[in-house]
Image 1 (spheres, rainbow, N blue to C red):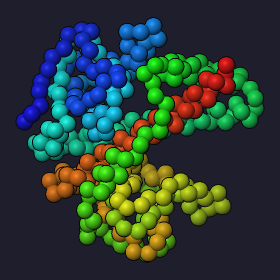
Image 2: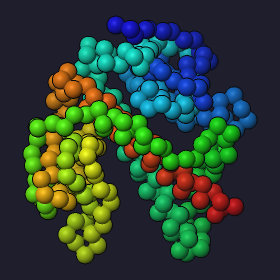
Image 3: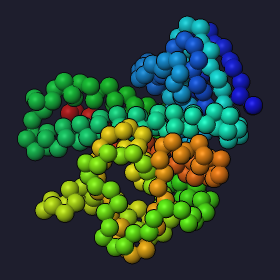
Length: 299
C-alpha cells in the first residue's frame, strides 16, 4: 500500500500553513501542536493532536490550502496517506472510513457550538448596547482577531463546486424508499442511527416543524446527503426532515454499512466526505464572521 511511516523530531514542521496539500496523516506516537501564524509575532497555538487522531485531511478531500501549521512536540511517528492512495487505504482499513467521518462530526459539532455562542453574544450586545455581561467572552474573541488580521487568513465562504461534482458521480440508485409529499423522514428528537442520500425529489429541513415558530433551515436537492451528523455523534435529531414533493426517493445508510458501501460505490463515500468537509468550512466561515463583528463592535 502506498502509505508511509515517517518520524519527526521536536520542532519539525509536518504541515505548513498556506501550502497546498495532497497527503494527510494519522499520528501513531507522540504529540503534535497546531498553530496559526507559526513563527510570527502573532503566533497562536490552537490545538494539540494526540496518538490515533488524524490531521491534514481537509486539504486532501477538498482542493484547499493548508489552514494551519502542524509541528512535532518531541519525537513523533505518523502514517502519511497520499490522496491517490486513499481508496487503497480504505480498502485495507474499512473501519477507518467511519473513524475519519467521526473526526469531521466532532469538529463540526464543536464549531457549531462555538458559532452559536458567538452569535448569541453578538445579538445580545447589539440589543442591550452593553458588553459588561460578556467581558470574558470578548477577551476570548479578541484572540480570534489574530486570525482575522493574519495575512494568510481568508475570510470567505467555501465554494460548493467540488461537492456538486462529487454528487454528479453518484449514480441514481434504486435502493431506499420513496416518500409522498409531506412525509416526515425523521423527526426532531429522534435518535439518529442512519444517514440519507437524496436521489430524486426534494427534502426540507425544519426546526420546530408544525409549531407556530416553525423555521425552514435548508432545502436538500439531488444528489446530496443529509442526516449524517446525528449518525456520527449518536445524538438525537435537532431538526425534522420532510419530503417536499411526491416521489421523493431516499437511500438509507447505516454506519455499519459504510465499509460495504465503499466496496460497491466508493463515489458515495467521497461525496459524504466532501459534504462533511464543506459543512465544516461553512460553519467555520460563519463563526469567524461573527468573531469579526464582535471584534469590530468591541473596538
